[in-house]
Image 1 (cartoon, rainbow, N blue to C red):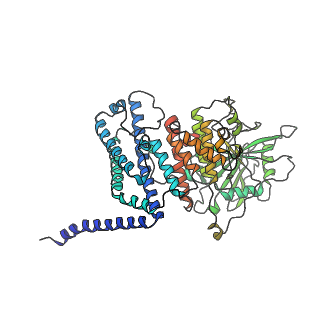
Image 2: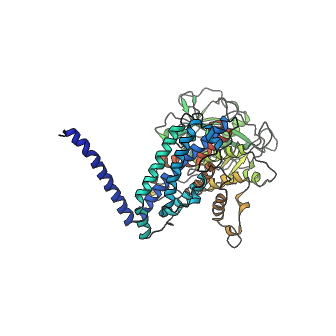
Image 3: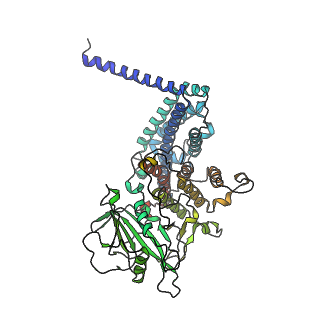
Length: 567
């Protein structure tokens, strides 16, 4: 006779099975009754399949890198790999793991073919030939669903629900085989950086931080609009230090976020008083991280301290009543650094502590557009990939804020010559920031509910990434079909970019290619998320894939791109 515990243990599996069955019936019923519900279920399935294929793709690329290193060949940046049994040379490098590797991969392919046979998923055999074609097809399917382009008929809903059991079983098998494959190769691929695999954890705060709008507003409020300099003061934000993750500790100020800026001021060394660049730094303190309104900011202009007097008790010398032009001119006259602290909405001055690393005082900056139209210029792939990572970080930290115009493009990015090579330093881009544009007042809490972000800056980032890859302006790739009556309009760039992106299949590394696609279609399906979730999603789907390509190809991490100094 069964005891109470034995009876309970026997009944529990039956109860669980019954509950799961009821859930499946409810899920099917909702999909049959509503095209919206069916589309949401289908979209969730696409996302899950895309994630599993991403894991498989990275595993296959890791095996290729391992095989190349074992044969004493220099590992090349992995290209778009076929989702099929790898070459004999690669299998040979796996030794005793080769046979189970083949069997597991064969199992994955069989289940992918099962999904292809499900007509409601709209996948074809050609979509499974390479990871790139599969990702592209899934991307277009997701785009159709999110834009209402998928079938809305009862027949399509019935067809989708009819094959759910077979579809879910195939997905379960793919997921299981992926996990077994990772376990099988865990020891073999230890040398492969673990961050090459899709991260399921929240990225570090330093990777997703945003520049302070309060800081921008304060500087804009003090920015000179009328002065006796007889020219417009311009500012350039140095973009590469967006990639920095190091922490700065300086006399009651701890920070893992700083910005470098150069500002044009009248050159006191020349009679013409022509403008010259004064280098600057903004340090954002973590001392009041829990209270954004009381963050500490330091504004630095290179040289010696303006004042030798000791700062009064508190953050420093009170400069609220002084104009920014006056402060900059005094700093340049004395060849000094201007070190400002922004605390609790107020500006203070502190002593400078470090010398400048740049030597651009008398240079004229070169717009990115002029470099792209220069057909005689040769572009190193390392410089392209580095520039792409920096541009992506810039959009991550500055988009949807006062620091970056939503219409930013190649005309807003410029460069200076390297002090060492005397050539344009493509790994040191600057963003034009117009502090004369006083930001509008913050919307009320009620108004925020009616204001949806446009994410136009991310679409423009996608176009910039394509231009970096092509080494030419997007305008050079207009076709007759992209124009209206022979003229470009506001949609020409994006339509051209989408067409050019499609043509890169097989030529452009998948990480870079997927990042571009995400930028070009970002405004679909992401509105309504919290700010932190959006930042995390931007990092994981745009920035991180570009970082991975740069590290794989040239062993460069984002923190390697910062301008090392002795702060």
